[in-house]
Image (cartoon, rainbow, N blue to C red; front, side, top):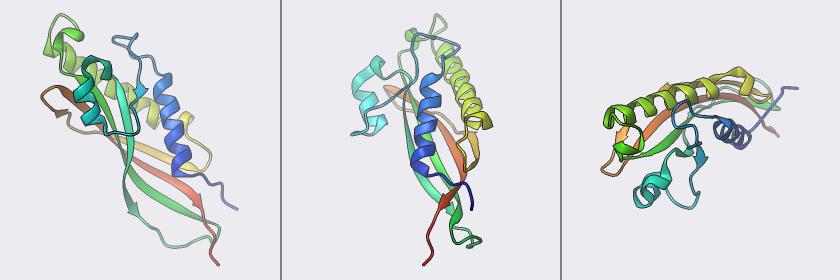
Length: 160
């Protein structure tokens, strides 16, 4: 019988991994999950600097539904998006204004990519978490760093 997990368990593990990180720049401002009852982009625009490094992790798409190879388990290939908020207040990031802001966003993205991709952070039943850095979404009052995460895992199923 195959070792299985669920999307929810992987999502919760990724939340735990992200919140345990200490950022290399501005280490006192740790990553924290944004409120779940609103979208991150809308909430961050209203809360200003309080939204720094708040994140949301959402399921984007089921990439494929593979052929049945085992009646008790199926391999899932899904894509999720991790968004991290950075209020557009260049003075918040250092003395070099927007250059410092972009440096913080880029260093955070690399740190997040490395932590999520690290197989030491996988759950049993999870095969991979491939992370791709996407272009930063630049809004008037908040920038959103986007990471696409392609998850591969084995999920239990019952074919009757």
